[in-house]
Amino acid sequence: MALLAAVLHALFGALQKGRHDPWLSRAAIDANYGIIAAPFALFVVPWPEPHMWPIFAGAVGIHAVYKVLQAMTYTRGAYTVVYPVVRGTAPAFTVLGAGLVFGEHFAPGQWIGLGILLTGIFGLALWNLRHVEVDRHSLGPALGFAVATGAMVALYTTYDAYGIRATADPFTFLAWFFMLDGIFIPMVTRRRWREIPPSEVLPLLKRGVLGAFVAYFSFGSIMLATRLDKVGEAAVLRETSVVFAALIGWLVLGEKVGPRRMALMALIAIGAVTMEWTG
Image 1: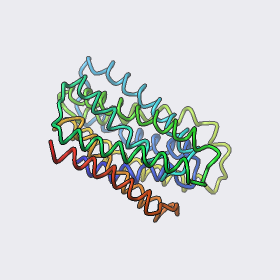
Image 2 (image 1 turned 120 degrees about the vertical axis):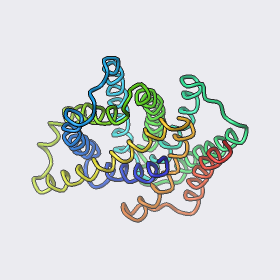
Image 3 (image 1 turned 30 degrees about the vertical axis):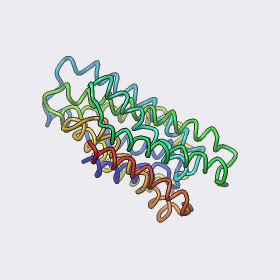
Image 4 (image 1 turned 180 degrees about the horizontal axis):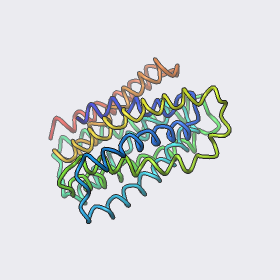
């Protein structure tokens, strides 16, 4: 499930970073997955227990901050530059959060794997600062926002893992989360829709539908994985998505990756796999 989430999250990030404004891409995705989830939340899955409402409120608030930071990151940096920093920073914070919240402990080999992963992250960040020419004027802020976004990924992963464990039926959490989470960004970006050419509305909505189903399987997979196994291990293994992101950025978005950056991204993935297999 974590590996499935890795592949799909890389695709999800590329959908948001594609040819459209990242704010509008995210709004289209959120609106679609909120609308599609509504009948399942209201009529199919069991209704949430009373203690779940404050948990949902916290989850929606955390994801709102995460989405704003993510959009600010994507508007300032190339996808293959900022995505590895976002996804690579997240597991370091998640491991610490899982230790505090769930009391998870890790073997020595797992800490070595985390060290390999962090080496890849910081090496990639330093290489980008020195060599990348795309969006050079905004690269520094983009990397700063990327680290902040990674911290929010860790926060929502830990918090949502707590939430999906707090309800009897995990699909209740998923259906209601998607329905409630689909409101914020469409409301924030409603004025931006007036600025796009009419010819772009339909392609953007199609991207939103595709992104909605990718989000269901990506987020749903990682949440179910955190319910079944350690939160830290699942979160780290998901960050092999940086390799898939590099391939998508190269093949789909036409961004140059290069052997050195590919090697550093692979180092991040090797660290994640090492942490999983030495557990």
